[in-house]
Image (cartoon, rainbow, N blue to C red; front, side):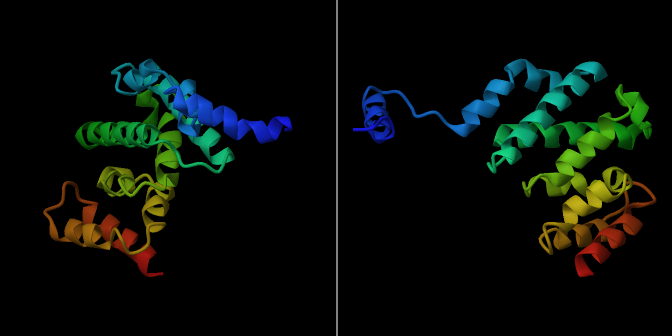
Length: 176
């Protein structure tokens, strides 16, 4: 029996002994530590920036192997953008307030590229929509799925003066 033919037998014996087969998610998670996820929630912009770089590397690694992005990575990135949007709604900071000037554009690009429908709500925050095509393109790729949320945005009292304009701009993307 050749070496390749014996691999299923080795896996069967390994599983019978209670071990689990290696998974792709485990490989990506090994690139990340619990500290990375803690840094993503940090008040220190430099720690958040370093965490973002590691999370983006995990996304790129998954895509290079035609694998889905691990759920915990999706959730961390979406939570990071939600946090920045909450800060932005309060102060309207410019991206350099986040440490690295590329932090916010990189975060918007990666969240806009996620295939996770959970990203829709954060991408539809008016402050995020104001940032441009990464947000609107990220919403538009879900087709008509976000349309009810966009319509609710238009009907709701605006959080800021641009909300109705942004809702219509996003809705236009769906219809074209």
